[in-house]
Image (cartoon, rainbow, N blue to C red):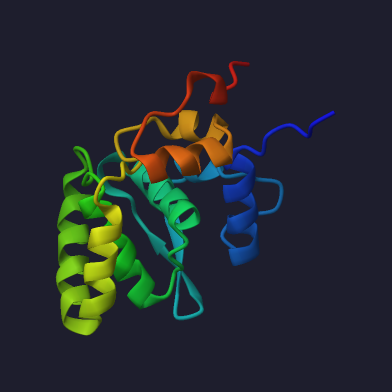
Amino acid sequence: MAAPPVTTREVLTDHYRRAGLLEPGKNADARLHDRWVRMRIGGRLIPIKPLLGHQQPFLLHDVHHLVTGYGTSYREELQLAAWELSSGGCWWYVLFWLNRIAAVLQGLLLCPVRTVRALRAGLGRRNLYGRDAAEVLDSDFDAVRNCVGEGGALPAHSVPRL
């Protein structure tokens, strides 16, 4: 009998735990309801207030790290910003648009070759902004990875209905 698919929630929860971004007993869903998003910057956890209810795009951004393979170093964050813009932008999250544009400009100054590669890598792909974060968390992680890689839609069967 085949093992059940691993959900994006499980993969992201594991990632958060390894990074020390989750309290014991919580899973990735907690990040959707937190008043503050904690990011590790220079080895320290820094609280950031998600303005205008932007917890959802923070979580989707974290899933982008997992599906693209871009890490969380400063330069890799700049690369991911380039990938996110060229793979469809930031939907209606205006503050994310401004942040991503500023990050790409920094990337073009600090690591231009990597940034241009990331911009090219996003072409023809479809990022997760604009999707419901809870639906993405419920989805099979491999289906999410394939969806982003192929620029398509999440298959209906990948979203279990409880």
